Length: 89
Image 1 (cartoon, rainbow, N blue to C red):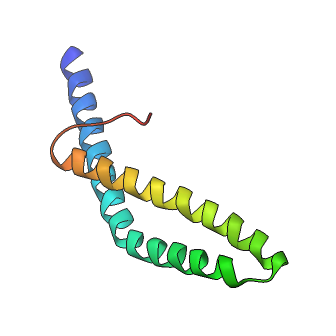
Image 2 (cartoon, rainbow, N blue to C red; image 1 turned 90 degrees about the vertical axis):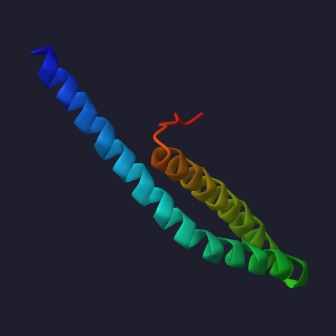
């Protein structure tokens, strides 16, 4: 009984690690595009009409959150490749 629990836990950890690695790789592939879009919206914010400035401000905020999330997933994938599992804080 105890052995089957340990096998289940080991398999679950392996699956979580594989998922973290795959998510980290996908996030690292998306990060350059996110940074490019963020830079675009930062440039447009100074030249935009007053109504569009609100949109660019909102869009920059959302892109910054996405960049932070992608970086966290990249770090999580790197830690999983090294054998560590980090909690989200």
